[in-house]
Image: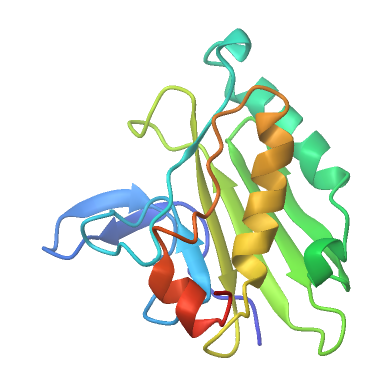
Length: 178
């Protein structure tokens, strides 16, 4: 599938029509997670933002530099996902935005992953989105990817929760992870 035209931080509307700055909504399919989708609006896709360590202060450029280090050493094929590798398309620490395309090994499917600092959504918070472009199920790929990256960031002092399959039971059941 082609790259969605509405990626990035832009005005979005919540369930009651209120406008906010956020990343692209997930939609109905169990193949996406997004921290700017409100928990009460979309519990199946909502995950917490990732909080960088306090020793980095409120310097988003330092936080994005650390995030880029972690992404750049990502292991394609970990947990049998992203065997086709990945490509950093946009890395703009000054703006507080990073966009990466991850590729599956067999079919060459592309998943879109975004990290963004959004004013007003936490002093040290990085918003996260990981989504499949095609298909309905993702067989756990987006959760495994985010959990791998989150684990490495936690080892560097981040509060990065990743995807909890207990709180995302619908995703886990539909993707046959439990």
